[in-house]
Image (cartoon, rainbow, N blue to C red):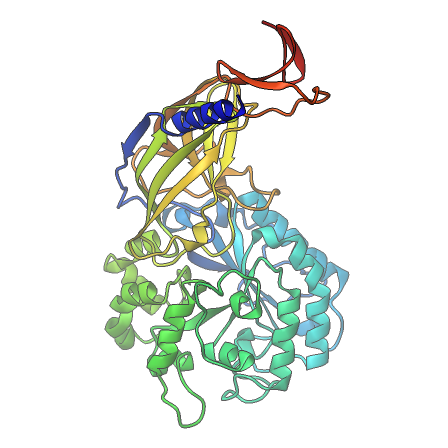
Length: 506
């Protein structure tokens, strides 16, 4: 009897897995420019303002004009915030400054934005703070960074040198030094202060390689593991400039000023850690020479964000020559639904197979962790079914990822007909239900702006009575297992059985 029961169960489960599927193909939207979180063009808010207790914020109270702009800014979801702390070089950060930071983050959260974040001491000179005060400031900021990690896209190391760019510095060695003991201590302190689920970006690749002691680029196996190597990304604030992007790809001393080894290092690394920044080409002759290289270089080095205004010699040429729009579409990730095979019917508590093909036509992957759900939705119910696939590994530049998974439909899903959606909300509960932080796919007729979900253009019927072995308490040891109409009963006495602990007469 037991053998027959199990054979019956396997047959029923096999039938459940082999039910008819709906096959859908999708039309890519190759032209629309739209907002998506954690990617794209940026603008710096606040400018070069030295903070003080009477002016502790970078995001000004009258910044509504910025967040409500249309045109180029309509697609933006990132702002650059640089906190200049020159008034505190020889004292602790005040409570007003720390609260000002909190207030700024609250505005970003309200407006549906995130930030590229940096702290520095001066933009006019190399007069940074001594190591002891820099470490104090980093330590005092740590809990505020953790509290507001939901609206921080990436954190740049900062603190050292003019603009916090680790070049001209009074206290941390000359411009030819990427790493020394004082710089090492700042980077170590910043790694400790940076939320563990956010990346810390360094200005030059040699900062990372010298800190780690080798030039091995991050591998797929090492990526997203929480190690120091996996947490350090890159930013380049001299994009397209001469001399190896103003030393970005240069070697110290007698090494090449534009080293192809370092370029290949960044090309490999940035499949798994973020890269972005701004161009600083201000001369019109050089801008004319290099502006058109932006698309190929952003693709090769996987740029996810870039300043939209500075330096205008280049960014204006992007606009005038039609390059800006393509950069706006492809910077960071741009996911397209290609096709899907989705079940037409499934039982409550049952398992079923789904397959979804996704293409990333952007220059970069997604870097911060994010859940992926197939959603069952009708007028009465919304049910999220999690997928295992990690969108951080949906590789860019036209690569296609096949999501093929067996999913379990919750047993308490109400019987009925549902529309199917793909949903990628933010990982943080504080903003997970805000559709402005959900990911939109680049397809025709799929985006639901009200919910932040992407229609899969397929329906599914949920029916009652999924096959399952239920645990029944207090059953006599000699009770027999009997299968009736796809349900498992336990025989206790003549013509009396239990189903899920309830007696049923037969």
